[in-house]
Length: 201
Length: 201
DNA sequence: TGTACATCAGTGAACGCGCGTTCACTGATGTAC
DNA sequence: TGTACATCAGTGAACGCGCGTTCACTGATGTAC
Image (cartoon, rainbow over all chains, first blue to last red; front, side, top):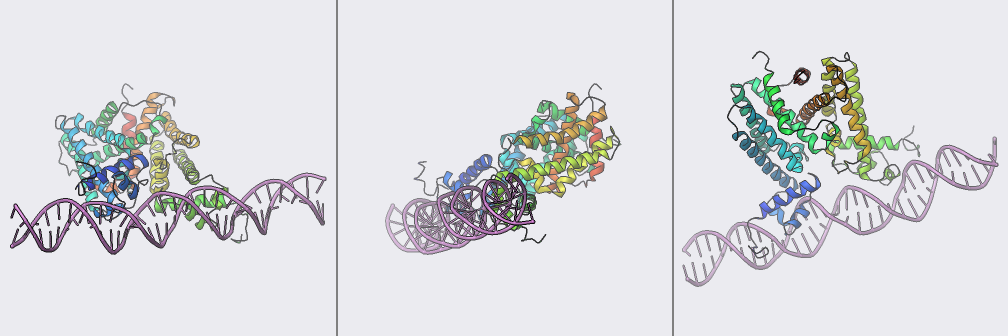
């Protein structure tokens, strides 16, 4: 466990990701450098290239890991409420907003493509999994199948809402509005509104 | 009008802003350099410093100019419909989404703080003006004063929604959802939903 | 258990690059008399 | 109208910097016999 004694500590990859996550939070998604990350991990500037192809590859890894945590948070939030309840839907939204608030840098990284790496298929898939959590909760609530276009549409509406609220929040735009916002009340109200407005149902 | 003959063309500032706007669209808010902007304007790399204090100052100018255009677009969109109509509200939202779609780079710049220049008071004010357009339309629609907390709250809800939809759109996340979206129908539906759900009114 | 060897995960020096910014300068423009 | 001068908006050379990435290397670890 001595820091330098562990020549091959086998943990560098994880440590680098952690360092980059920290840098992304401090300096923004573009304000990180491989060199600085290596420095923080107490390692030479060449070492990261033993674990990652290049700079974008590192960012991709951090984004992927962030998305995993986001999905888990949403799943756990939903699991704390009865299946099909309005609260389950609202709780997912709250988990989303909380994630954005706690890790605005990673949140921005995940949703900003930042370097034009929109085409990474694993990130695409992770994103779909996240959205899938919302879709499932909505489907349960509306007692319809997940592939029902109406379910997809309502889920997307909720997502837009929560996504916009998250961004406005971390960008400090919330203060523009005079109305103070209690997230839980707010999200419950929104969820109810969106899920109630069922045309022809 | 000969390009080089105009030693003092008096237009450099505007030309630089235009060049930076272009770079921001192409390479993202952080992917622009003063040097490249100067090159595009056909000017030495030191010239920009005659018009701007430093790099962030240029970005701030571009952001401010973008916000002006966004506000004008929203105002014009609203003006095309009767005062107090639902369409006026939806049109503002559509103008917002259209702006994001047309100039994703500038949109991101405006809402990403990017360099930590959240404290520029003129940008803050411009932002409040933009939000003011929404507030006014909502107030007209609900026949309540603009400073009514309920109006502010509804306006913020609409903003969250449209903002989130804009970001998801330009980040290519729209394709995650199976449901194709017609923006106008979508925004009308949303506006109606948000403005109708008046607790106790 | 001991030895030979392949692999693996680091080092550290070096490279070329483009950038932000400064500086002394210069030629064009505007103004006062 | 002409001249002297202040100002203004550029130039271009130079600086120091940190970065991404490569390279030959080295010492530790794991494995086969």
